[in-house]
Amino acid sequence: MAVIEQVSKKKRIEPKVLIEAIEQAILTAAKRQFGAEKELEASFNEETGAVDLQLYMTVVDEVDDEDTEISIEDARRHGLDDPDSPLTSGDELGFQIFYLADHVEQARKQDREFGTLLGLEQARAGFGRIAAQTAKQVIIQRVRDAERERVFNEFTDRQGEIVSGIVRRFERGSNIIVGLERERQMGDADAQEVEAILPSREQTPRESYRPGDRIVAVLKKIDREARGPQLVLSRTDVGLLVKLFEMEVPEIYEGIVRIVAAAREPGARSKIAVSSRDSDVDPVGACVGMKGSRVQAVVQELRGEKIDIVPFSRDPARFVCDAISPAEPARVVIDEANKTMELVVADQKLSLAIGRRGQNVRLASQLTTWKLDIVSESRFEQMEEDAMSALARVGDVELARNLYRMGFRTLDEVADAPTEELTTVEGLEEAMVEGIRAKAKVGMEELRKEWVTHAASLPHLPSEHDRLLLVSGVNERVAGLLEKGGYGTLNSIISEEDIDRLAIKSGLGAQRATALQDAVHSFLNNDWAGIEAGVAVAKEKADAEAEIAREAAEAEAAREAAELAATEAAAAAAEPAAEPAAADAPAESRPEGGA
Image 1 (tube, helix red, strand yellow):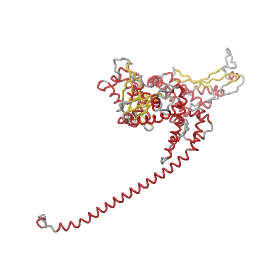
Image 2 (cartoon, rainbow, N blue to C red; image 1 turned 180 degrees about the vertical axis):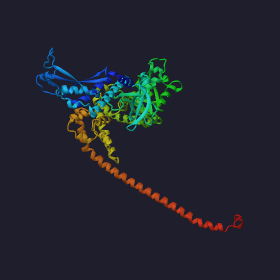
Image 3 (cartoon, rainbow, N blue to C red; image 1 turned 45 degrees about the vertical axis):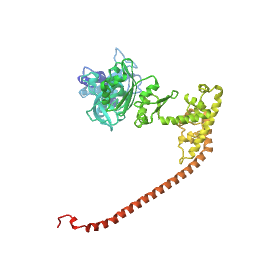
Image 4 (cartoon, rainbow, N blue to C red; image 1 turned 120 degrees about the vertical axis):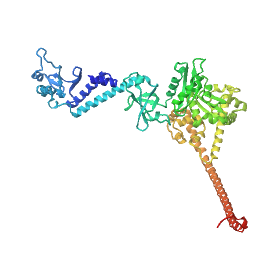
């Protein structure tokens, strides 16, 4: 019992759990030795510190199972019947099994008395090596399961919190095993540390550790099915950024300042949006701290990761403009239906707004949950001019300007717009709507033919995406739906025999799906051959021009080589003539000395 209490204190496991593990181990070993069919029970004896093993058999009139049943006649013959309480069918008889080395005499005596009845005469020589090994494995597994259950119960409420520990070793490549400081965290002076794993996928790029280094991470999840450590840490989770600010900024911990949103690209850059419940407290200033002390502490813990702190605003446009800093948009075009924004910035600020490899706009999009499109002022002016030119096909310039002002950018948007939306355009009455729609459809077909003509003038065939856009009725939105539904090529559209499947997967509806297939067939039959022929001619012309340019370049190179050779030959011919002239020089001009 003292050993159980010692192990219980060291492993921080209840003695009851250890006793149950020992009982189960003895029972498993006994069934392996005496037979799995026998009714065996194991119970821990606190007085002796050993496990008592009992065999139970049921009294019956006729025996069907010799392992679990005994007849009334056999019981009476072996003196197991009590005259004061005669045996009846259904009663249970219990026999103690003596399996320990100290109980050899008791075992022999029982064999002599009940060996034939119990069928254990040949098996009363202890458990043997295999059974003992089985018992050992059972105890180890039960103790391990108890430890894992304890760890789960202790840390299940701490998911998402920051933990600290010491790097112990590396496993399976770059996975880091971390020893968490349970004494400090759990307040138990006798507690040992518990192991957690920091997988390679949860490690910040370009960070390296050595055994013995201190590490701070967030407890991301508890994997109860893991074969190794079940505590999974993360250094890349955005929650680490939030929790670090909670530790460094008292106003956040007290609830005065709140982190509304956060976005992060681990090891490179992060953005957080903050707000304040107290008008006298500047949320950005509180997070930055005196001379940047608070934010620098977080940056240092994240190994130099840059952090942008922006104020949160309920106005989406203002919030996005702050999130895209340090760039300053000159104009914002909002599409609330699709939750997208088009930000117009100065040409010289375009790269700053996009960021390195799109990092700045990507983080701003994650922070605000809006899809952002950054365009330069010159590009926006060109897009505006193209949109006005297209919209002018439905009417005069004034009507095109009014349509553009109300958010219409393409003719298909005009053709598909409901009457209620079109009548909100200045100068457009309900009686004019159908005529405007008809003009928009005519203009769409005119533009499509112009694009077909342009595609035929190029020296290469259009991509699959561009081919979709050349089909009547297909714009960027429809092309995106088709590609998302698995219909990114013309062949995949016309080969689809089930119109309903095409309508459902693309989200276009049965009527538009049928019209789309007809439009694709029309394009392939009427326009595609002309595009292929035009591309072949353009390619042949381009190849010829390239060949002429190559020959001209070779001729120029040959001419320059000839000029260089002539220059070198002239220089070589001039050198022998200069040497005799030097030999005929006056004696007084020669240097003194010599032989």
